[in-house]
Length: 335
Ligand SMILES: NC(=O)c1ccc[n+]([C@@H]2O[C@H](COP(=O)([O-])OP(=O)(O)OC[C@H]3O[C@@H](n4cnc5c(N)ncnc54)[C@H](O)[C@@H]3O)[C@@H](O)[C@H]2O)c1
Image (tube, rainbow, N blue to C red; front, side, top):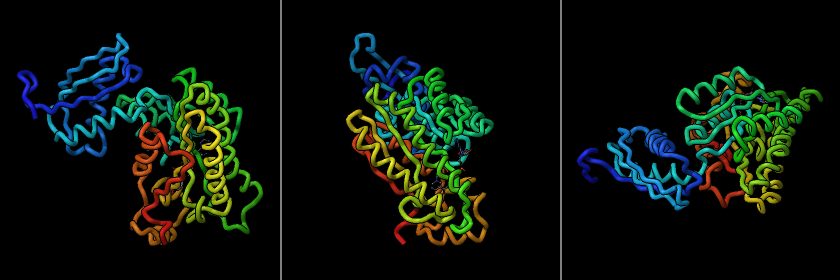
């Protein structure tokens, strides 16, 4: 704790950013305020926007930045600020598919909150626009796009639109998916194809159209949303859902190996039972109770909890993680 004649008692935080991460003092202020809204420290941090900063960007030097913050506790501030500074996603373009609701919405919001410019892409443009509005109302950068990921031509147009409106994507979250709760003997060929087209073809098309841009820039973070179903069998979905999510894990491993030389990380997230419209709409209260009874943590997961993991995988903090499939399921696979 120090004292400044104008600021009063303050905590001093010094962040070191490279010039490319820092375009103006405005960014700095946003960075500091962003830290203040860090969900982990939401309760304890209050910034009263007295920010002093110095940059030497014009000389191409690494910028030592001093930020003076009033309120909160020093450890919280220090950790929060350095966390925001090293995430490395500020001003990066992120495409999140299926971002109109459920987990995709949470992924889009946490990426935007941490400085990414987010393409909120969904087959339902109304929900995508709603999420986009909520992000921009809170000061984030985003744009809404309509896309059916099961159609290669639409994905190709999406990527071209994103490049034109936001810039080259550095982060791709393949989240769009569908689930059908049909028992094996009742699955029709048409329903099998619907599930595979969205959950598997969709991931392939998005990777196919985005990867060349990442290879060119020698940077990329691809996060594929698989499921515990991909490793075990689905709680709420049918066999086709289980098969599609296992395929996503195969795509993840293989692509990770091929793209490592281009500095592109490819990982899968395997959520357990998460409280989203997908689960609510494909389940009865009784089935939901049975499902929850199998979770050691004793409840459904929240989309925001999965979003924290996606944020980590999208950040520079996960630089040596690739080809992994990370469980987030309240212990569901331990029983
Ligand atoms: N909820 C869970 O318990 C759970 C668990 C493990 C994995 N997952 C996976 O997580 C992802 C998100 O699931 P959720 O629970 O948020 O689902 P959700 O149904 O709530 O949301 C899915 C979103 O994807 C969009 N979408 C569907 N088909 C699309 C298409 N062809 N093109 C573009 N967008 C499309 C929908 O409009 C919707 O906005 C899915 O891949 C799902 O399989 C969910």
